[in-house]
Image (cartoon, rainbow, N blue to C red):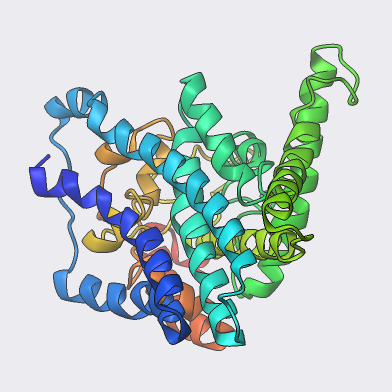
Length: 365
């Protein structure tokens, strides 16, 4: 992989820097991160275009093990943790005096912790290394969405593109209906998966090995500790901290669910006569190989290969021409998904056309 491409993955660190600059500049500068993500980045994405090149097969094993790529994700973990602590502290300084400043700051932080942070947590959570798994959990703790570690790996990747998966969006389903199911049913499914795992090992659901207990309590305890420490430093109860912390968490995991909605919209795996679903392959996720947004998202947009080969590291994920292709990168698709009539008008014809090419005409949506 070229040096420029390697350095490109550091672009994600631009976002927390923009939030900090916007905060200290004050006023409407707090909207800078929103403008960067949803105006400037899509414009650059469109101008630069697609990168459909893949790492040569003979180089995959070498590039997969390069320390540089792991270093970027490890560094992000420390940056995000420190960034969230900083953000919780600075809201106690009374510098955010208007709705615009509050809105811009909270949204900006959520774009960092959700748009980038959960993406990194997702990447690390798929790896076998205990250290990477720990970093994944730390990142998810900062956005109050730790059950994702169980539900995504043991639920979503098993049931993706089937009616049983809460995180697979249905044909003609709005994002808002999907959000409710994916958030609440996803949490319930994670509880069920953990309960079944404990029962197989002969443990009670209330056993200390039940990760869902810790996953539920950890964000609350983390927020409580931050509130206590910052209140002591400020000489008053800083009520803004818990409100801010959970507000940015909701924004963060809503961004995750927007991405989930986009990645699997309307795609269902075929079943054989016995009702068994075909094996997951690159046809079962929407793909986007837009170069710039893939830098920021650690190639998450090459989602087709990720689902076919979940353990592959982000730097060696492949583009597949035969996968269903999104017309834009995630930042633009997120805006479209927020307006259901616009989403249906844009995506339903693409889904129908793609299914006609891949499946029998009778199976097209």
